[in-house]
Each structure stands twice: as C-alpha cells, then as structure tokens.
Image 1 (cartoon, rainbow, N blue to C red):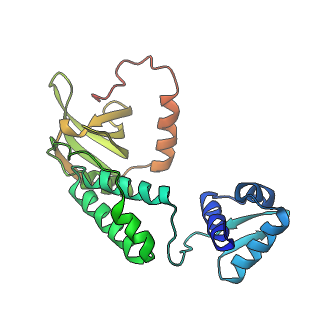
Image 2: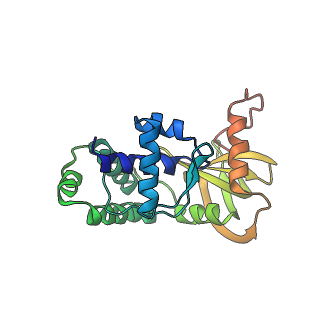
Image 3: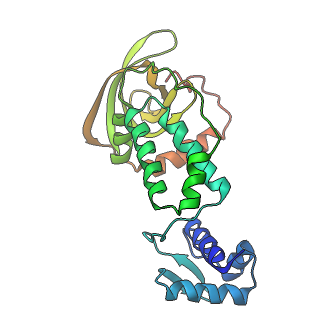
Length: 236
C-alpha cells in the first residue's frame, strides 16, 4: 500500500469514528506503527484535514471534511454501483432519480481508470418491483426528516380500515413491500405499516414531541425482546 492510499484509509477510519479514538487503535486498523501513525496524522493536519486531538488523548475528524478526488477500491466501486442500481429500481421515483444522479456525480470526479471500472461493473439488479403503492413515499421520507406527524387511512390484513395519526421515524425497503415504522397515537405503541395498505396520506405541520433517533433506538430495543403482544405485527 502506498503512503497516499494509507492516508486516505486513515481519513476513512477517522470518518467512521464519531468520538475520539486512540492512536494505538488507529495504528492497528491502518496496520502501521504508532510512530508512523503520529507522522501520518501530522501530515494530514498539515494538508488541512481538521483532525483534532493529540497523542495520549485520541483523535477525531471534525464533521464536514470533504476529500479531494475520490479513490475507491474495486469492491467499493461494486458496492456503490450495486446499491445505486438497486435504489434506482425502487418504486420511490424521487429516490430512484436521486440514486442515478448521485452515481453520475461520483463518476464525474473519479479518475479515468476508476470511471471505466464504474461503467464496466458486471453486478446487476433484477427487474423493477411492481409499484402496488398508491402513496408517495417521498412524503413519508420528508416527514421522517422533519419529524412531523402523518395522517392516513390504513387497512389491515383482513381489510378492516382505520384512520391513523403517527410519528414516523424509519422506512424499510424490502423486495416486494415498503414498511414504515412509527409511533401510533391510536395504539400508543410502536407499529409497522405496509405502504401498499396505506391511502389518503396527508403530511401535517405538527412536529411530534420526541426525536426520531431516540424513538429509533427505543424501537430497536423492543425488537430484541420476546413479543408477547400479538398486536405488534406488520398489519399495524
């Protein structure tokens, strides 16, 4: 591995850590001595990378740092292309278009040889899933981002309809169905709602009183517990 590749790897490792990480941990991940690690940190700082910290205290990369011309390994390119192609085949039209645009932006700043690898990857995605949903998933995603309540009509597996007002915090994309995770005001509990059973979707201007990250963490904790409440099912 060249020194330039090692410095790029070090930046990526620092980017993964949100809190200060010790020099010894970084040295182990990069595969260099602690002395070499300190020299690499000093080099990156000298080149303008906003790395804070010092020996004995740990290092952290400040948010917002942008790398110069992008470099990717073969597997990273395959992962980017495969992921973008999969998203581009999803029924969410705005998200699909964004995936295609993002891939084009990445290709525009890659060196010529890597751009050729990007175009020539042989990992393919199957046909587009049939869009059985009558709602705009973009509205759901925006409500999640803005932490606003959603109102809609929901039909369960037996066809029974009910009006719901929920606090959406996650949207799951599966091969044949999209599922929204939310806190349901009617049930006073976490519920999962299949997008193909939702209709009359209406975004509200009402901010829900909790942060979505906190609800996501709490919801994940419930998934690890034995489910004694039979009402907790994808039918909402």
